[in-house]
Length: 360
Ligand SMILES: NC(=O)c1ccc[n+]([C@@H]2O[C@H](COP(=O)([O-])OP(=O)(O)OC[C@H]3O[C@@H](n4cnc5c(N)ncnc54)[C@H](OP(=O)(O)O)[C@@H]3O)[C@@H](O)[C@H]2O)c1
Image (cartoon, rainbow, N blue to C red):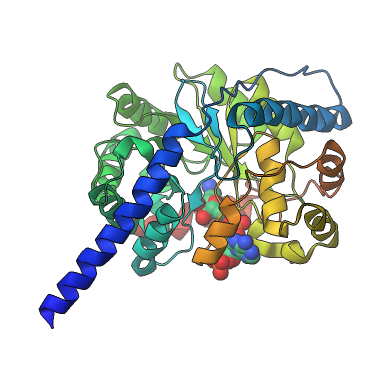
């Protein structure tokens, strides 16, 4: 009985190795297009800024597809402002139960994802770590993976942040993470940033950034820190397009990453008729259209799904390009309103500061 179980395990390991090697090769030939996020004219009005962001996206995609020769299976990369290269599409594990996380991340890696987004406040860093261990044992190289985690608000004062950063590395089973973010713009963000900066200088964080920083916070942070954030992870989806926020990020050379690229399916996102019609033209699903639209705007996406078939669907977005007209049509869906909440709402600030207080 035990023998049978062992041989099943070793068979599974061999299968994983085969897949990993296949995707490892793919990653090494992938396009490493340099994706400079150039400054925009800050004097344009909001309509112009919408067009500017759309046009910029189109230009970027053109150069990327030239390099990647539009191979359907080719990942694209963003070069962060410190030179680190990050896959433009990754896999997010928010709201995945701790006990399911290892299986999900192993599935994601097996179908080609190399970038994984977790956080201290998701309480599943160990599961991500276990999946990374399996992948490395299966033959994947550490440098082929891009691992992001986030420091939670209640860990922000500098001393506490230093310990919490160690704790994340321990839970993930890693010597370094590729990207560490401040999860929210509250509490002692400057103290927390000093802690992240120390790990960055020691090479234990390859890049550091922020999340949920609105334009005013980003400007303040960029102007008052020696080490600038490489990236800001914010809500973005077709109904909350964030053109103005993207423009400010471009001005400060901070990459934009979208959380909840599907808006978690709110407002009937997956059955939106406009997105459905556009999808039909390219023989693509609504989910694929949404991801492609953000990728063409130069936005890093980290969709979440627990289902392997959807993981495959969501990564299959590098073999088509939306026309400029379709990009604009999707842009016109923007309601400029969060599908979730406003991070400046006093009640929400209180909620976020208190929700995990007893756990950190
Ligand atoms: N920094 C922050 O404050 C913050 C906040 C939220 C999220 N995030 C990050 O962003 C990641 C993604 O955001 P999210 O998980 O909130 O939402 P999301 O990716 O926009 O949506 C996830 C939802 O869409 C469904 N789904 C996924 N692919 C689908 C497809 N092809 N067709 C139909 N349905 C599909 C999933 O269902 P199934 O799982 O059942 O397939 C799940 O219900 C998170 O995992 C996390 O890493 C960060």
